Image 1 (tube, rainbow, N blue to C red):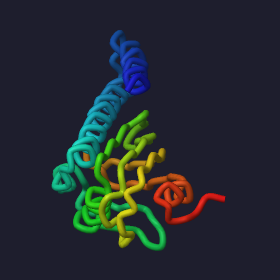
Image 2: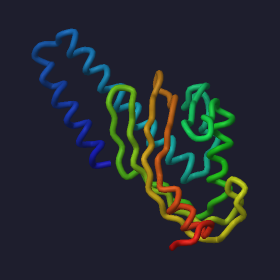
Image 3: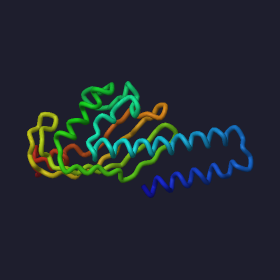
Length: 172
């Protein structure tokens, strides 16, 4: 949150320099900065509500592009319903969930989110029966926004560490 405030403050300072000469470039910069600020706020609020409060129905065409794409292997997940079904696994698979956005920043229509996910594996998770193990994993998500909506995401995390915390893969 502190970094986001710093970024916004830095952007405001750069825009403030435009006040004396409101050129076309300054007007465009100010509009882009306002859109970025709105995107960051919407993004943080939406994911906090979805994961921490279990409001899976916020994965909808109000917050997400209808062709939302989760870049993943072996193939991408495309569309609201597939995206919602994917994240439903986290809500049914884990209790005592705490999802924290450690840092978020962006440029233009791109956002980078550093996050932490904690929870107890108390339900089925992508076909894995509950282990009752606690997880604590960090990750990064690359995001593409489109018209004020989330259009594409790609998550990066240490899957080996995650599976070891679940007790699926033994530690060596």
